[in-house]
Length: 296
Image (cartoon, rainbow, N blue to C red; front, side, top):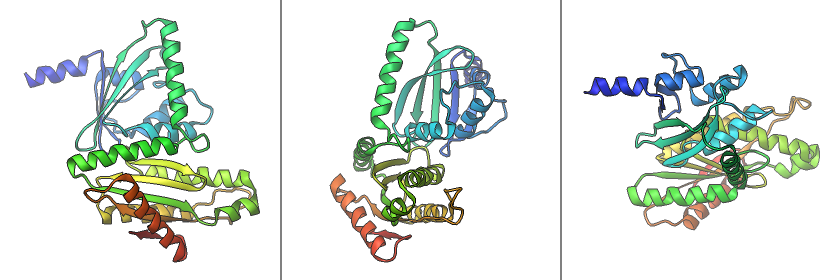
């Protein structure tokens, strides 16, 4: 019976795929492989798959002139909810309804069905609604979650931690001496530094981590399931990656750093309490010389 079910799933016209906790493809049925141009033995990450689809103009139809910005935005939504459903286009003309279901081990099951027969007027209305919702959740400069969206995710993860006891690490990250960067190099250069910061950090995150811009040069990072030592190790790697970056081609010697304040959720904590401890820790990091991490 199990082998018959497995054969039926593999030959089903419904697109089926499993991505592991690192967002790497571990299983795809024939329909998914055909739609996204995946060989049966390939284990691409989701980001690698989307980049290849974009470069080859096959598989996912990605409407953008800036793929990296699109990828940052897409990753800021992927894996953040236990279940998500959305519409997507394929380059072969099909229109699919994609669902993403997170599993307890951090993996993700993706299931997609063909919706190409839906009326064009209904499709356009749904797309307009989705675009408006996405814009309301996205920071326009960096394409990651805006303050409202990341704080909403913060509330959800706190509720999950309270219900399950799952650890939750929270970090506020601030770019060091950012006003001086703006004053010395100008606001366009400052914007490029902020974009570079996001591009350094996001590839180091897991699919279910939360990352959003609170405003200006301040960002919020949510790391569910991480112990204190795991969170500190991850954050120190991020600080090192930022310090090594040289984001301005016309200023090859220019670099920048950031500071981070870390707090762990404790049973009974509300959002304000966790946030306040992370903020105090950030202040301590700034006071001890910047380009460092403190925990409170």
